[in-house]
Length: 328
Image (cartoon, rainbow, N blue to C red; front, top):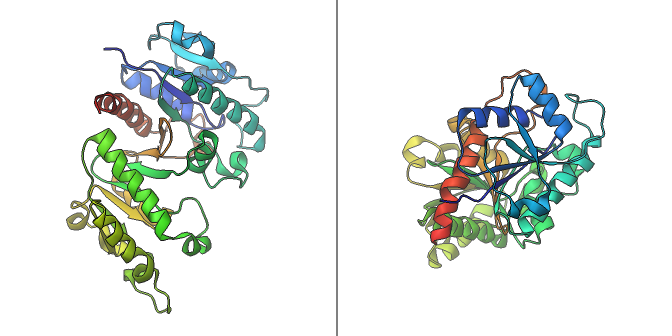
């Protein structure tokens, strides 16, 4: 069986991503050819630093559909990186390099060589410069997608925040019936199309215990009516549930996805439960995009202590579920 290649964008050069990439391909022989979009200079430097040995093959992105790829070598698209220092603090000088990595990957995806995409972690502060809340919104804009959702996926339980990387003070004004419907519909469609079943979805309230002393209670006025609307439209969603008990085992086992109103409301309990056994999937894009569910972690650069599990899970997910997608 022919497996489509997986495009992997390096991301932040001063990150642990190449370390976890080396550990991943050492740990497991993947069936899908991996195409790493990164600087040859950085790759060689980090291979030497990590004492990792493997042959490297450079490719032109325009010729990828004419060659037979495998994982006997590290297949790379070389992206120029002019900075003299490596393994240094994250700074804005990396922005051009990261942008070029992403733009090259978009070309490969546009050519139809593959529809499987992974990106390494980036620094939102130095790369996005407050223009986007996160990579989810960046990719939505770059691909022309009309809506998107950030699904943190684990086979046992996944979560999705309605609002992503924004200050808590901004959350309330960004909670709306329209936004909740968009995210829940994307989740429902993804599970049905890619995973092959209709998910059981729990929606959390915004306020503690879904109660408020204010005259306007978002749980009563916004969230409850939205749940009724979605349920009438054949989406298996229930709530609102209080966030302080939703993740108790007796409660969470009843659901496939828990949707929260803000980032830490759902990501904190999920990472406490499953640690690195989760991946970040962007829903709503014209291709399947995944990233490891962690940041650049510059403090651990060169220490050879980073856990590759999330990247391994990302590659495994694309291999397994790409086959299912083709059968739909």
